[in-house]
Length: 467
Image 1 (tube, rainbow, N blue to C red):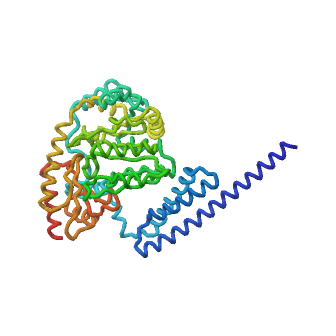
Image 2: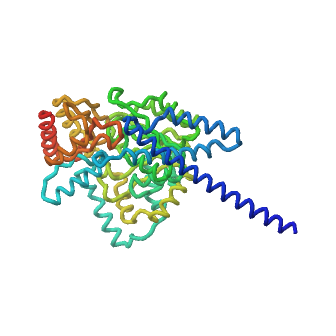
Image 3: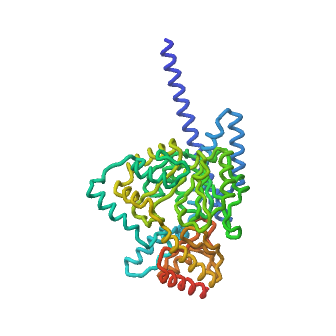
């Protein structure tokens, strides 16, 4: 009899949960309808979709109610972030117009369009992508041949070959062990797997703009919310630490750094890195440091591994230093428990990096890229000199492979400039691809021979003179 009553009670509770769940979905639907109406009104009034002040007010109310009801504020905060992100998406749909599509250009979409033009017979000078024109080290060819001859073309540990991880740990130093290294399919997948490993849906990630667009894409894919700390040319792309501190909330999980920076070439001074690490420690945050361009630093650069922060994840790659973009070999450095989580993501997604590519990377571990660095620096100096003569405003790159000048003259929209240049056979990256508030900038890559750079810059000059 008691057992029957318990089953009856269980059935009623399940029905109640089902009804509450349906009620929640119904209210979410009503919220979505309201968001669409708000999006339409904002579009008519030309108001920005995201309003941080309004968000904070709602967040404060949700947190207060959570405490009152005894609900974990972190959980309710994640639910709120999911709804806020959906509101933004719906409002963007309401405001989207066919003619606005080109503003979604990124360096990769411009590259694709340039390739299409080339396939139709048009010659293009590629100043839009950071792919070195010089070849990989010669020893790589030998390593690939040996891999085939020695039948080294099988599955490997998802974390990578032990020998390669040991070699990377030795090269990085700072007490790193091979258990704290994972070999990934390019630096891109190292960041992707790191974010998937540590971020829960609705949690927040802070990125410093202008920034590589993939950070936002990864966070969106993981169901997180990205918050951007904008830097300015006037402040020499230096982040405001007080503003960064104000952006941190109880829902913040990660701060992403990228120095030397893509696209500005900024190298952040050690005192700023130290302050950011201090903020991360005080708030228990993870830090992901994208150091893919660390070999191309023209002033003192200190890796995050130097600070020994136990919630740091440092990412690098063989793509830039060894011109191995197509080999897709990158790596991540973090505490073993983080590496193990990243390895699970990699195992699910692609098993492991191709073994021959790992042997190629191992053969290049001691390669000295000084010649490549010198070449890129000379090209950046050439671009900077030409842009100065055209009266462009920019900061001389302290690292990486790019110059990020602000547009001048009558052309104040990066997409318009990109399309005009493509028609004239020159591809550059739109500034807005690195942050929606940078439409008055473009990124010029130094990955072409000097003669092509000069020709491309002359085309840019001709457009500027007309406008």
